[in-house]
Length: 604
Image 1 (cartoon, rainbow, N blue to C red):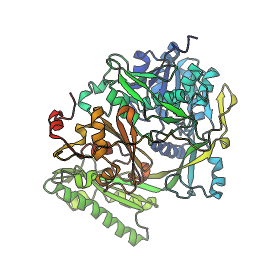
Image 2: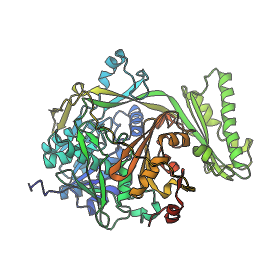
Image 3: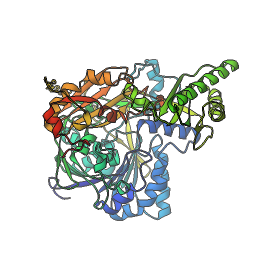
Image 4: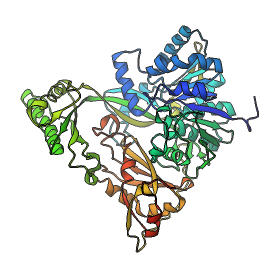
């Protein structure tokens, strides 16, 4: 083995979620010159989908695309090149996923050692937790009765151990997204479980590539600067023993590796950047640096680590009735008002039918008009739109009730508003409503095994610290608007932004386009100002954290997503658009600065 101080491990990120493009893995295998091919499939929403699938067929519960499409297209070449594969495609049935992969390997005539990480399923603890009156870690709600699954977010150590034992492919169930990258790095560099700065660096590498093309120009604020979307490159990290890494992509592919775009991904869904809690390390990303290193190369350094917690986060799912959503296109004069009346009339008519049949009211309902900027609330600019999509979404305890709702969408096409139409007037499907419940569970209660070649081996996990230790927050230096700052500009002229979610919490990262803009941003884009700007969406508090290394701040908006995930009835249940919305917020700047800003928001 080469000297670890000079060794470089190349890891390609081939999936940001279950449903990512089929071009990713072939591109990375063919052109990436990679050592590892890693996949992240398991968003919290995906777990609910997998639970529903396994309820219909006990052999399912894993990301079937990983087997049927992705590995079928690359497995032979992966084996030929000696590329190792790590994937959390196992979902809630990792053994079923591994069995399907073994059958595929036999069919294709290749020999691979497949390891399965077991232990994330903690559903056996549910009765004891119910007796102990376990509460949700975010809402305080008691543990629901109809629990469908409960899976702990495991870390990278079991993956590293599986690789040490000789696995060619490692399949996991629930693990933190970055673990599929950190595990190979622990194995390759021999990092100990107490080299926290290195573990934080490896975790950050995994965080950057865990969402696929979001590291290569996808979702970038200055989207017009990103070329060749159809052939956009998937990310590669070139990782070094000291925790530093370079973000790049295969040559000849589209997209761009820009320091600004990588910075956007640094802040993506990290919460408090001084204490990004993972099973193997508590990361401090406040002083991370991102530096352009020529074309399509960005160096990332400066992550720091602290001891991990003594518990795992657990994501449980439970059944809470059914859901359905119907839509119609409304054209013409007063389209917005006609559409809103249509949605409200559907709800009023069906509620009367429920009353006559002795059925309860909806547990939740929402009418939204796509094209009228409903999500923008008081900041909307298109109330006079003449072409809109009416969407009405509902939850109900009874499948029968939502069957009634489903049948009452299409009749609006001949009953009420002129200009009612749509590409399809088929009845919308009624589906189970599966929600999330989150809590923590002691690591000592979660034994972990690796199954390979018919044998199970236990993996010892360090106990962790009972109390998470975070470094003190740096003081936030603010520059309030000075007298004479009379020119109003949208925030996008000064900043980039990216947003996402954690349950019902919206996470918006804001990065200054130039270091000198940060004090101005901090002075005006305060938690109070953000709370006011989103007052039509956010019911809880707003917190702000500083990342001086990339001249950024990160906002957490609590009770902001109508429950978030499957619980939310909004068009944007994951808060993906809230960063874009915030970039429209007006800030005041000196006239001299205003003259220097590029009108279309892209900086010279």
